[in-house]
Image 1 (spheres, one colour):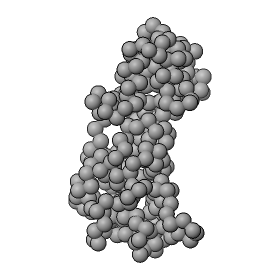
Image 2 (cartoon, rainbow, N blue to C red):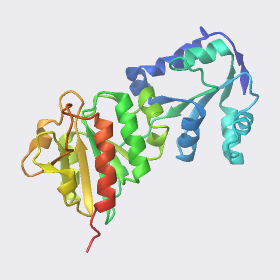
Image 3 (tube, helix red, strand yellow):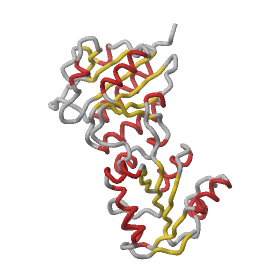
Length: 275
């Protein structure tokens, strides 16, 4: 553990804070994890922590875990975290924290490779495909729900927002560190799904079939598009199964994360068992 850093202008603090920028995350292969809940999920998900900034009110990460009544860390992991911990004053922690809420802990972690082979199809599998979604809050919310539903994996198809965005991580409540995630082009995604014999259900407002009337197969991929433009051309093909959520009020669409939740829970409840 190093000496206390108090100044928000400390070069180490300033360099770490730059990880809020996507180009810095991509260039350095790192990401920021704020708040204890997300850190616990990352640790449990086996994510490698390379640096940990701890509020000066605490002497160690173990003390913070005890203060928040969290299960104690494995001894070897605790020793590793102690070795990469930097104690920081309030002003420095404020510089590192996103938004108004100052976190007692901010970690720097290694990114991992988000490849399609991270997802292992089972006989009964539900995969969520998020195509070109721009808003990190919606991305995180969908991953959080995907984790709750128990999906086999999440694929980001031609993503606009990166998975390491702080808002996405926060909105997922750390589920991003636990759910198998892949990033691929729409062409690669569709080829992978077809190769693994997934039924592909695309959520489209103009689709004629309600999700309530749809027969979910034993391997299903639910595809949702961006908030502004909907699904890309690749997902408009007639060979795919278009479904919609009935709209009975004055609005003509739902938030994409709400639609995802409705469809994932229904699919998981009604997917047919393999014969």
